[in-house]
Structure formats: structure tokens, C-alpha cells
Image 1 (cartoon, rainbow, N blue to C red):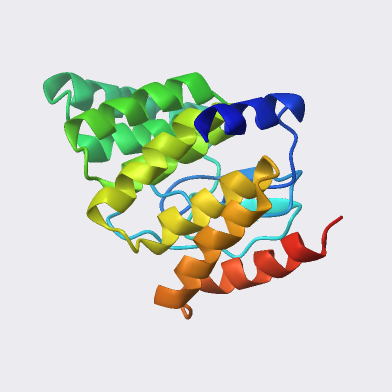
Image 2 (image 1 turned 90 degrees about the horizontal axis):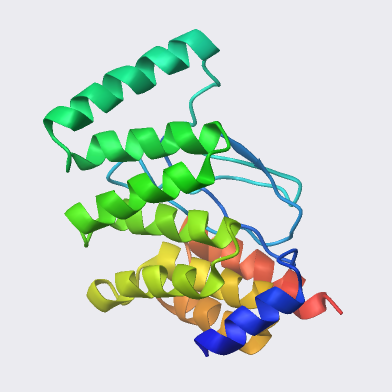
Amino acid sequence: MNSSLQRRASARGWSGILSLQTGSGYAGCLCALLVVILCGGCGSHTSRQTAATHEVLSAHGSTAAAKPGVEAHEVKVLEQALQKKPNHVPVLLKLAGRAIQSGKSGEAERYLREAVRAEPRNIEARLELGRVLFDSGKVVESVQVTEEILKTQPGNPDALYNLGAINGNVGNRQRALDYWQKLLASHPESESGRRAKEMMARLQSSP
């Protein structure tokens, strides 16, 4: 399945029909060219969904863009804190958030990988890493990172939603619907469940 996902993503030039939904904490706004939104999480222990249109996507509680000087000072303070405690996940997540806001996806990915290495079962870090990988066109690894969540939390609604959206993005409609149906069977009233229901209807009605 993974090789099929990558081939389909490459064939689309990574401009498919779906996009990622950020979770709680820091992640600013993303211009979503696509239809379906995936969940991500970073900077808190509870993933909160966002309300999003297919044009602009922003996170619940996302921090307003800081002035350059203030942001640079915050990053410097965070980096100093990280030097004292290199595996401090909250600091890694905040640095990843600032990197995303600055458009530095490679830097964000590095911080998030470090966070996942430090806490392999940290759901927020995995969701956000999967989102960043997805945005970078690394669809196979995005799936792998997100699937790891289901090994310890088989019914995690955010992971199920994201896996459905990733598959939908590369044209694997049936697999997308399978993930979302599983989500609706276990968490129909969750934010992920409500969005999955909406996106299933869009996916089924699209040509």
C-alpha cells in the first residue's frame, strides 16, 4: 500500500484534493488548496480540532503572529532551554511551532522527530509530525508515523481521520472511507467524527 500511496502522490505532483488540519497550541494559518483537512497536534496534551474551510485553516488557540524581534527572542530562550535539557518535549514542540510559523518545514520536522524519539507515545508530537511530513510530500512516512498511534490507541479519532484524509488525497477513496467509517463507529460526536462525516459526503460527490 505504501508504494502505491507514494506513486499516486507523485503522479498528482502533490497537489491532491486534501489538506491537513492542525490541532491545538501554536500552529498558525495554512492556505489549504485542497478539500479535506487533517488533524495535527502540538504544544498541548489534548488535541483540539479546528473549524476550517477548504481555503484557510487555522488552529484552535493558535498564537497570533509575534513581531519579529519578540519571536526571535522567544526562539533564543527556547533554544537555550533545549541546550540544558535536549529531550524536553514541550520545548521541542514550541520550537517546531515557531518553525512552522516561519515556513521552515525542515526545521520543524527535525524538532518533531526529536520529540517523537524522546516520547514515542506522545500523540501530539506524532500527529504534528505526520502533518508536517504530509505537507512536505512525504506521504508514505506520514502514514507510517500516524499508524503508530493506532498501535497503542486503535480508536484514536484524530489518527483515523488523518489516515482517511491522506488516502483520500492520493485517490484511494475506499480506504479513506474505511478509516472514516471506523471513526464514525467509535467517535461519531467528536470533532473528528463530525468532520469525517462532512468530508465523506464531499469525497463521494466529487468526480
